Length: 139
Image 1 (cartoon, rainbow, N blue to C red):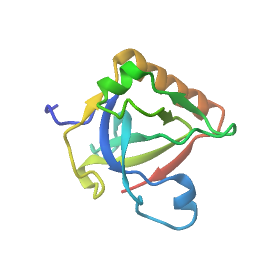
Image 2 (image 1 turned 90 degrees about the vertical axis):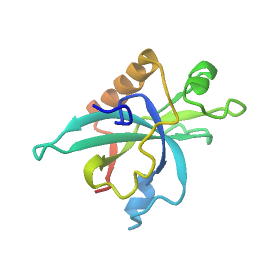
Image 3 (image 1 turned 45 degrees about the vertical axis):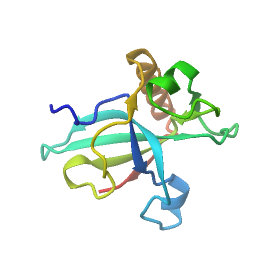
């Protein structure tokens, strides 16, 4: 892997497509937002599929699943430390690195610690086990 290859826990600027936007027929994220690479897997074709979670300053509603981002982790990710932030774990974008038209900057702005990254992965796995994970395929 090269130094700029996305890895779990890295924070990237990404045109995240919310599930509600995809359900309305939209195909493009409306704005770049900091997002967390949750997992990178290799598909049958040998391409790298990135599963990306959005980071938001909007407090999640009770029906959503999100992890609050501690101040220390916000600093590690080079995120705005003056506002409360959450990483949403109940929906992801799946994007193929080799064919992505939405992944512009291939160098992360920062990264969460391995411990916090593991918490994110476990939370996503739990939501998936519960059958409540929303997924928008981007490429």
